[in-house]
Length: 474
Image (tube, rainbow, N blue to C red; front, side, top):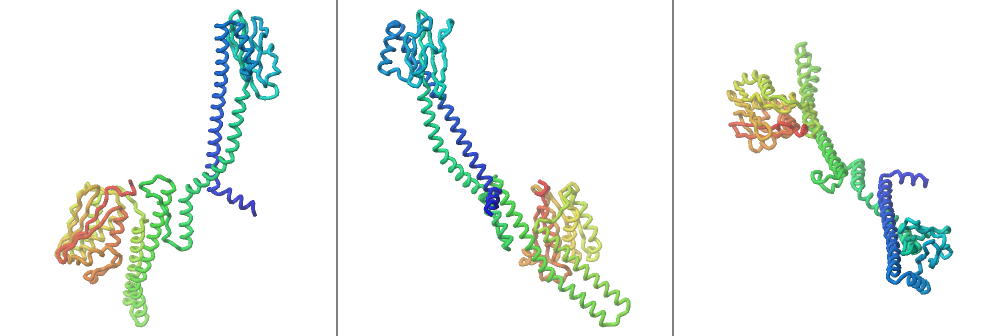
């Protein structure tokens, strides 16, 4: 059981991040110590050599100015007074016979006659002697005096080793503290780094519990921050917003379906019941079946339109965007409604330049044009006109659909693009109340906008703006 818990902890991302941060901190501290130790060792060694050189130069001056006997006397005096303690001093004749020798305490058993000297062709040199029982080193600089005499001055590394040993002890005593600080800082950094992920997990858990309004906290906006976890949180929240809109849209669609299907379903039932209650001939039965088929088609159109609107409003409508000239699409829609327009003696004109090209879903845009032309004819006055124009504006195209019909009251104008909304004057016309809602949804799916302008009993203008290139293709 205990081993399972340990394994579970070790397998977590937080543990791995803590281990990485702590290891980097501790190894960095160790590397800094090794660098400092190396620099300190070199500095102390250079100081020892400088002291040896200084001592050697003092004896050389005495030898030059006062002679060899004075040098021997000075060495003897310093040896008696312990002023040469820690130094190796040896003076030999031209045949390398020792005249006087002073040894450091840790090298008191050293045979001075066996200390390497200068070769006949050397005037100065350096040798290093090491004790057999420890790491102490004796560094000796040799120089040749007048008449072939040899002067050797050296120094033991004992003091240097003691200093470095103290440094090691101080570091070892601090190593435990460095490890504790490393683990603490690693844990803190891992905690801070994983904070957005914990927020994400909490949001997911709340969503699983049924709270669809749960969102991840973001330290800075996506546009201002470059932190990957913050961007992930922003994208997660955006995805939740889209899902929430889609779910709400589906709920509203179900409400609308339940509301709007009641009439055609009731008609179907009434047709079927009346047909069973009466003895009808075949022609009457045929008409009843045709009425049923018409109501079934009406139900199918309602369902299809509601689903399209829901997809568009939720931002998940599938569009086959291609570079398309808009003039042929609008002219094709006009041709579809020419017969209906002739029945109402309405003239349709389309002034669209052939060079106006946009990225569009051809079928969806044809559906938009057909809906707007159908509305213009349906609510236009007999003998009136429907005009369609297009012009470039900013980084897109504005397409206007205008008629000189009944117009839209100012109180209805803000709501004409809502689902299933139908103004008082439009209730006399047959329709689902989904036309303009569908148009708005498709236009916004293309990254465009739509607006309406109307004067009662004079005119109505629907303007749509479509960008040259939707954001989905940028």
